[in-house]
Amino acid sequence: SRERKVNIHLATLRYEAAKKRALGPSAFVETSKLERAVLATEKELEKLKSDREGRIARTAKLIKKCNLATNVVVMLMYYGVAMLAIDGSRIIDENIASNDEIISDVERASSFWKGLFFPLTYHGMGYKISQYGIESGMKASCVGALAVFWAARTTSGEMYECAISWLSR
Image 1 (cartoon, rainbow, N blue to C red):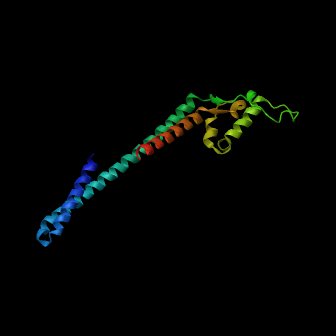
Image 2: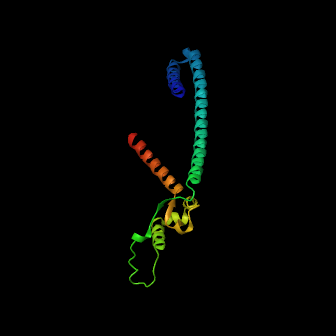
Image 3: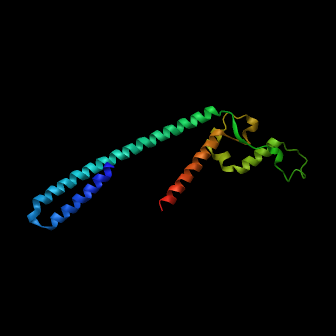
């Protein structure tokens, strides 16, 4: 790329300037020309770096907007659809024999789900947002589409980071 070529040219100019400087006062004119060329090249390199940083910032902003738009589309498309629901009929409660009260399947499923996802159900605003539109009887024992989408995004991101770190060793 252009920045790499400028870096190589700058290193070459610095090396030549150091060689001319070592010759002493007899090579003063050539040394000063090379030093001016080094300064001009450094200025060009700084401009290229600031342009690159600007492009990175604009790209990050665009990615953030695209992620937000994708979240809105997923929420609108799957509004009220439970992506993963637990049926409480197969959850065995050890305390049923000792207590006379009968616990419904929905209550069993919701207590199991709350125990499984404890930090998310009580502290995660994203988890609560992902459950909008799901009927209230099922809300405690299921996950909405946004939670599944966010989990998939996080998992794939972590796998990508692991692959990159493994390949860069």
